Image (cartoon, rainbow, N blue to C red; front, side, top):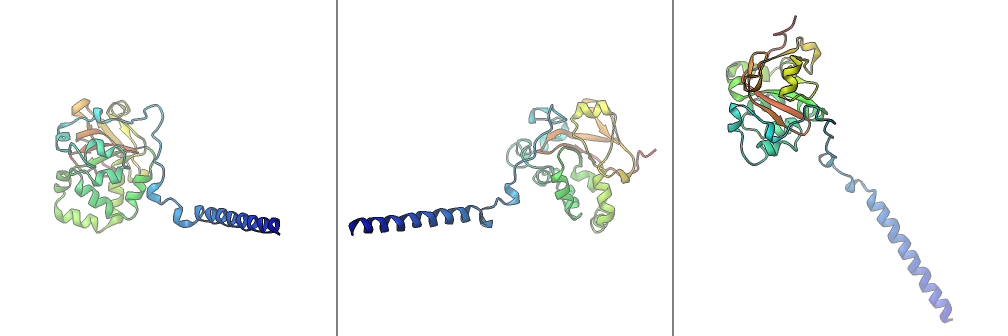
Length: 220
């Protein structure tokens, strides 16, 4: 009789362990434990340099206006994809507003693997005038080609740009390559001076420039 009772207790214990194990497996595969998009693995940097820069490579007269700490600093921008990094930089508030006015553009830029962004500083947008800026922000179909014209579909550092001479833009339909001239602190893009260059982000190298570039300016 005692043996039967012991066997019975053992069977109940085994069943309990089995149910606990099944429950653990269900919890492990439940939707609540799945990683959110914000927890996705960071995009790998291109091998062999590929235009990737570091904080030590940053140059230009406007770099002194970039915060020295926090998410908007050069060191803080390194870990974020480019649209997110730009949103924290005080030199680029109007560019960020323009990008947000084009549905899906921020996600497109953040999702690129290796690009170069020529980012007009706020004073460059001020030259367009408030009326023109508001007009463009209200017309995403007109604004999108302008913004994409500021993006090269390959990652360059300053020396790479100098060597290339011209670079294509993200929207081939926009027309015309971007023309690179000068060297070092005198580097220009379609005549626009580089105010702060070689800024590293997770998926892009950024050059803050002093002019809003217009598609077709150098189209042959």
